[in-house]
Length: 88
Picture: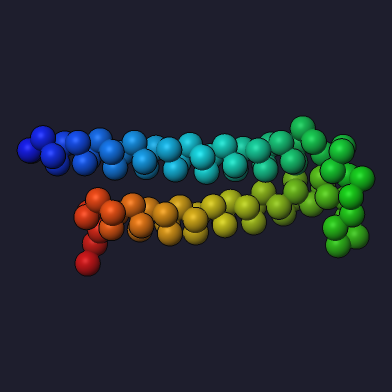
């Protein structure tokens, strides 16, 4: 493998890890933070007739996870095209 390809592979992996870490931090903040740690503070707000903390614990973290999957797919497709490792 040439030096240029090795550098491109390192840069690709570095951007991939940065994206993964960012999405995992968001997922953790929403699922654990909003559903557990900040539940009492969020319960003062109503959403659809239910306290917001309860909503995040039951539904919000799942919806957030699904959105993060689509964001990951979109961003990885961009990253693959950037480093010319996309599938035709």
